[in-house]
Amino acid sequence: MISHVSRPWRAAAMAACALLAGCAQLSPDGGFGQVEETSRQRLGQAPAWNRSPQQAQASSERVRALLHDPASGAARLANADDAVQIALINNPDLQAEFAGLGVAEADLVQAGRLPNPGFSFKRTHAGDDLKIERSLSLGLLRLITMPATTGIEQRRFEQVRLSLAARVLALAAQTRQAYYQAVAAQQGLQYQEQVADAAEAAHELAAQMARLGNISQLDGAREQFFYGQAQASLQQARRQAVQQKETLARLLGLPPDFSLPPQLPALPRQLEAVDDIEQQALQQRLDVQAARTELEGLQASLGLTRATRFVNVLDLGAVRTTESGKPNENGYEISLEIPLFDWGEARTAKAEAIYLQGAHKLAATLLDARAQARLAWRERQDAYALARRYQDELVPLRQRIAEENLLRYNGMLISVFALLADAREQAATVNAAIEAQRDFWIADASLQQALGGRPQPGKQP
Image: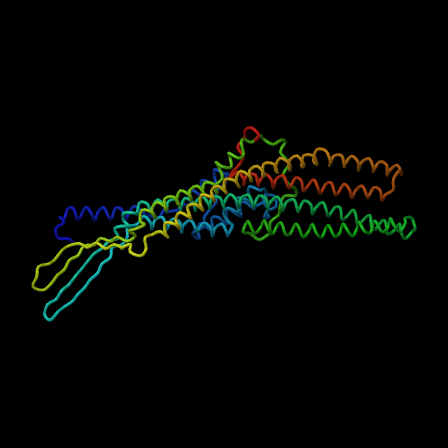
């Protein structure tokens, strides 16, 4: 140490260093609390980070509780909200991404730590003369720029947190869409099984009548074709139901050994008016906030690069020299990098290019957010109108036509094959109605994802 520094001042300096070193600490939750709160505000549901066996066990018990059906005791996924909650606490990909938050927080804490001092020891002798040099140095430039670098890492950590929260919202939307796809596929399969049973009965009747010569070969071939087509559609519906359920189970992090509701949720009576969707998207979307935070960090990084363009290394150290027959020597040394060959133009140009790149990325993100919000809103409006038309007009009208044809068949005004042909048309209408209802719920989930949360009621855009 330097001998002419008084002990009180020396103690105060050491205490200040210890205080600065203790300011940067890892948080108990790794910064996950803010992600959890954001999810709860946007979704009404919160994720869980299973970092310990106890937390993993608690999540497993909650998954079992959400899948438990009190009536049957079997595993049953009751609704889309339960599916989203299970995905948020059990999806393995999401759990892996949560670990990235801990990495970002570690970088932030590391940037706030004081640099370790360096110690050097030199011992030389000439004959009986002994010379010992000791020095203790500290990276002065790093200490001076530590507030700036800590601020940059703070913005990077905030960017990672926002990106992770956006990933949570995206997983919720994907899970909702997969849930509606799986339920619609199962509902379509159940109806297709009824159609296949009717086609099989018609095929047997046509075959019996053909043996008796009561129908033409053309009518018999038509019924045989319809029977084969119904069986092919049934096989395709089974394959679709299995695929959609596997997709849903993958997002939930579970095997597909759970049951689903027999049909999709009912359509809402009417859609609520939504406030300016573009403004909502710009205010709520987390990818927009992350892009803005990234640009702020790049701006601060550019300023730091310009400030340290010429001097990038500056060390300050205390020196003590002991030599035989001479009094001890105390002093200090300063070492710095001389910008003789590298004037920092390349580093500055790189920082400026990265900042410009970030500015254009932000502009592109804002443009995409507006466009996606408009498109998602329009798709939901159109999907709702189509689903309503099927439910309120087309399906009831087709049912009425079927009832009228049945009366005519009972009055021997039309043949059984005309009645069966009408049943085939009715089946096509019902399948289209199921698909329209499914598309509305998928579009509703897509709108929530495009807005970064649930739509806020207000005037129509």
